[in-house]
Length: 330
Ligand SMILES: NC(=O)c1ccc[n+]([C@@H]2O[C@H](COP(=O)([O-])OP(=O)(O)OC[C@H]3O[C@@H](n4cnc5c(N)ncnc54)[C@H](O)[C@@H]3O)[C@@H](O)[C@H]2O)c1
Image (cartoon, rainbow, N blue to C red; front, side):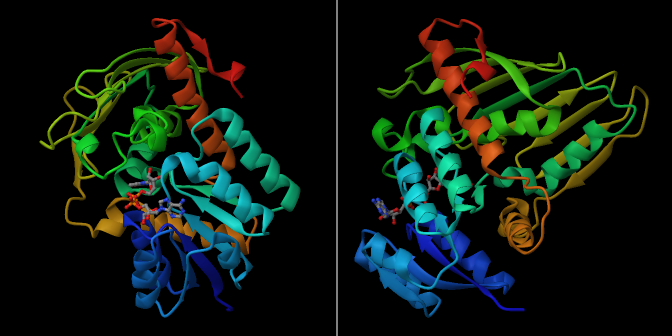
């Protein structure tokens, strides 16, 4: 089968991850790499015998069918739209955009050009959350609420992660994964309420979020990026009718099917990074979608909803915790 030529836009950490996985899977060819930083572009391109570009228009003229947008958040929409307008399919790292307005513009361009958009909601493909979804969707489990704690040290990470202009706001960074995860596991969220504060940085960096799902279930997320990196910084619990699923990191899964019943446990900690984080399965899924008509797990609609959920949280914070109906944003 003919390989699909792909291009990497942004040769930083995630650009490197996606280039490596794309190359490893063998179904696509990493043909072009673009970065504003020439050295980065050349370094990554050199690893895959591909062409390096420092001009995006030139790169988009090269023989590629799909691009991976891996630049800072604030650039996602404009770069994705330029790639779509050039006729490319787009994988955009999360968040799809930093406003619903921008996310909808991406959808308009994709529809106009008949191109696919994929979003970096990789946790949907990680074995631990696939297993959690299987458990909570099984007959007999009547989920009632979800509880997510995500406190890490991310804001002292990469140079732009505590920079509001590049990031779009703290919730667009990692919390967007968990708003999406809540929907992936339990269905559409109807309403959010949120409180936020600037605890350690100038931007709001600490949030408590309440969720109400369309099916009546409830949820809570507490999240900050000014914690340490003590494990587990990522925890999800779904509780039902005397049943519970509990995950810690992307490593440890436990499922209690009822009072006085044997607890099922899986430990994914030794899986290779690309598998554990869902990146590899996400790549397989995207290439399958390009080859045959199958429903998208991480498509434009999931991307738009995840952006709308973040925006709803910020609107609620601005209104001192008022209820925000998510559908008023989309
Ligand atoms: N899904 C995930 O697990 C995950 C994890 C980390 C980061 N991300 C997302 O991936 C994206 C990239 O993050 P990263 O950690 O790789 O960042 P990074 O800083 O390592 O890389 C960003 C790259 O973009 C380049 N760049 C900056 N401005 C540019 C421009 N105008 N045009 C072209 N290139 C430009 C930089 O030179 C750098 O090489 C972010 O949107 C982030 O939210 C996703």
